[in-house]
Image 1 (cartoon, rainbow, N blue to C red):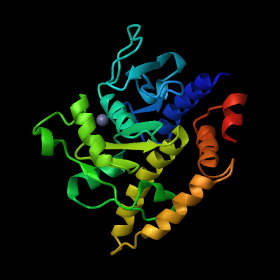
Image 2 (cartoon, rainbow, N blue to C red; image 1 turned 135 degrees about the vertical axis):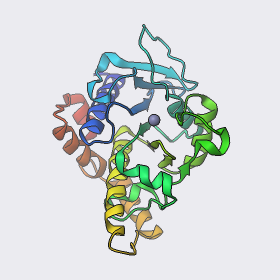
Image 3 (cartoon, protein in one colour; image 1 turned 90 degrees about the vertical axis):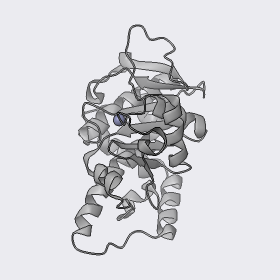
Image 4 (spheres, helix red, strand yellow; image 1 turned 60 degrees about the horizontal axis):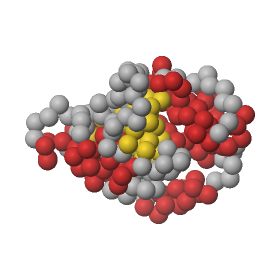
Length: 249
Ligand SMILES: [Zn+2]
């Protein structure tokens, strides 16, 4: 398989995994930067992620224009993806979702911070973007590039940000890394909420976060992101082709 085909296979797998792990439901989307053209990205047509197949994958310019729509309708919030690829050359994959546990942290002022080592990739404190600050009353969806760019500014150099009254978005230097962070962002939100019922929470320190992320980034093949990817593929009932499996493990 060519690198593009392998990447599309991983993108379809990411859709299924995020649905299986309850990060997305009927809504939410995942994209990957085009491996041969950094000013393009690949993402499904507007469809529930669990139902996405290879034929649904479309190519977009960073402005969100479909390169070859062939009658396929794109996600309305695709501008999140293009704006983040535009702002961050290091970003190779973007996930947007409305996972349940993160919502409370976007509407209460309670800071979402890592409580367990596996959630260190979310960073020291997850920032919150509020559409109201710049755009006033909207339907809360990021429906053009000016909103997308404003959101990308809040993500800054981090891996994720919440959207007040809406959801969150996550970036990664690979599909596997973005999927890992999206899943553990939801896990951390639930754990932090539960822990806070007992009293004061002791969060990971900046030094601990740095050491954990450094280890994950240097993990050998079969460890870290690859190991969790293999596990989540199994749970989602995905059998990867030999090419894709070889690329990751
Ligand atoms: Zn949304």
